[in-house]
Image 1 (cartoon, rainbow, N blue to C red):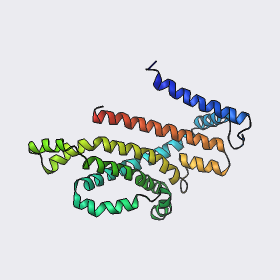
Image 2: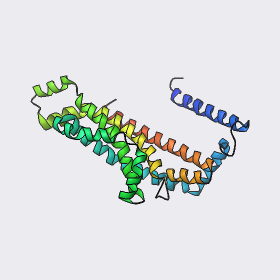
Image 3: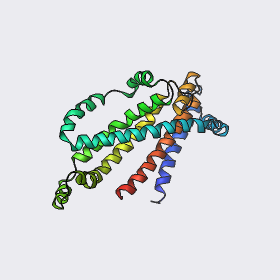
Image 4: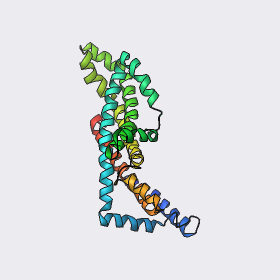
Length: 248
């Protein structure tokens, strides 16, 4: 039974939601015009899948997410190591980064369009910002709070400077870095929906915004479901890679 739990419990939870959804719409508690039946959503999903349109939107969003995630993670790790390891650099850079951190992603959208025009670049820029901050904060925390016993042991063996950073501090901070990357990956899917509001003709966010214009709530829900599936798959893949890297 324990082996079946990872499959059984999710099926039960999703099944309960579908049953409740069906009951609420069928009994008229929810208007079918604004909240379609699960079967209607399933038919819309099949139409997207059979027509090939689904793959166009998925690939458009996935490519933006992967590029933005890679750039945001790289920037977050590099600056996080510098801020966490070098006190003078931290005094210089950390106040500016902390001041920018509370600015909502949506507030960057007008500037992104002005700076980069329309197309993929504004969306990638927003994803980079969304990914950067959680990766940065977790990297700084991991670097700063390297167990002192590891540092003393490495110093006893003659490790200094670059060797200490590469072979002691970074490996110790890796679990924190990967946690930040996991949070950032989730935010990347949030950002891609916001970024596809303007200037693109394909993507899951574009699909949702376009469907909203025509009051096609079935298409909106299909887009949301696909984002949930893609986000979950990406997260599971990252967790598996993380487990291999940190040996758990």
